[in-house]
Image 1 (cartoon, rainbow, N blue to C red):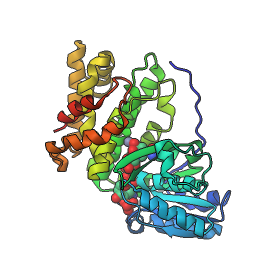
Image 2: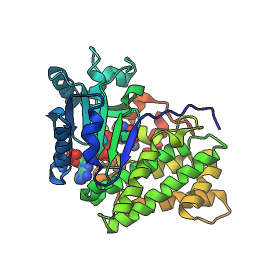
Image 3: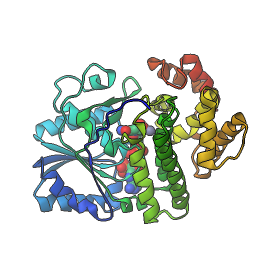
Image 4: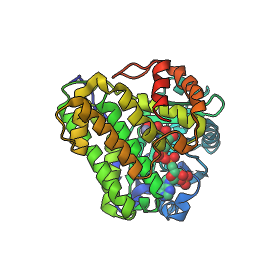
Amino acid sequence: MEDFVFYNPTKIIFGKGKISELGNEVKQTSQKVLLVYGRGSIKKNGVYDQVVSSLRTAGIEFVELPGVKPNPVLSKVYEGIKLAKKEKADGIIAVGGGSTIDTVKTIAAGFYYDGDIWDAFTGNYEVKRSLPIYVVLTLSATGSEMNKGAVITNEGTRQKYAFVAPTSYPRVSIIDPSVQFSLPRIQTANGSADAISHVMELYFDGTSDVLIEDEISEGIIRTIIRSTDILMKEPDNYNAHANLAWSATLALNGITSTGRSGGDWSCHAIEHSISALYDIAHGSGLAIVTPAWMKYVHKEDIGKFARFAEKIFGVEESDEERAALEGIERLKNWFKSVRLPASLSDVGISSTEIDKIVDNAAMRTPFGTLKRLEREDIREILKLCV
Ligand code: NZQ
Ligand code: ZN
């Protein structure tokens, strides 16, 4: 196990009806906030009304920025920074999934930066100050509600990059699993694939003797799989949503990365290139890339891949190679069982596009820790995705 510092200041308020507590929490730091949300789901499922009612009761003024799209873009961030400055906002609220939260984290940082906030994504600006951030989560997937990262696409350059900053942790995130009853099944499945991938990126980073983290990681993945299976049949099962929601938060809030070397993150790097170019859902992209990456690299840590097969899918097989391959096949089949795509062609991307994806991903090579990937490795992995 590696040395580590564990720090996570986000207060989580979890449970049915808890959105009513938003106003009182925001009041601790802010009087006038920017209220940011997506393309309308919160107006249909009653979340918007709950948010507005809580803010009004607490006497918080708010200005709205609707219209954040999945795979959020830099132009929306600029719009938000401008509006927040014009209105002299002293806080910011995200109501939505990862796309809305990440937009908010970037606006919150850009509010205090005179340059172009894209600099934070390219490593040319270190974010040290942000507006106070509050979150009402409506889709469990990214873990952004309890971490310091944000992912944004620069539409001009088709770069989908992340920045992290200690001031990007939300002060408070409210997770009411019942607001996720309105999710289409495919969004639930996308979220599950993303959360599983977060655990796996850390689990397979090559660090040895991290037993406690491995056990926690395996428990999170098994819980996500079980809860998702229930939700495919019963989309309004509260406890399944609750178990899935908390698992997805724990998947990327720092708990599973303690003692490790920082994660591999190759599947995310490759997937971000795919969703930057073709605007597909991040979770769907991961369902395609992850089994391919596993096939390509499993010999680097065959024992760990065999352990994964046993602990996650109950594979009983003494030959490690056969066990590892069986585990990869079971994961792929599970993704299919929840209607996630299994290949690039399933999402309408032809094999002739591989060069373009390789070029995009290669802007940041090499990456990966279990196996350091160069341009040609990425091409081989993508060939396994067709
Ligand atoms: O536009 P709205 O109305 O909000 O609808 C959304 C959107 O269409 C809908 N939705 C959300 N909650 C709903 C709902 N529909 C019905 N009922 C509800 N309760 O779901 C769709 C997808 O929303 P989005 O926010 O895009 O999904 P997600 O949470 O999966 O976020 C994905 C983005 O986060 C990034 C991804 O790359 C992608 O851009 N990531 C962020 C990370 C982070 N900050 O830590 C890490 C991840 O690895 C990931 O890269
Ligand atoms: Zn992800």
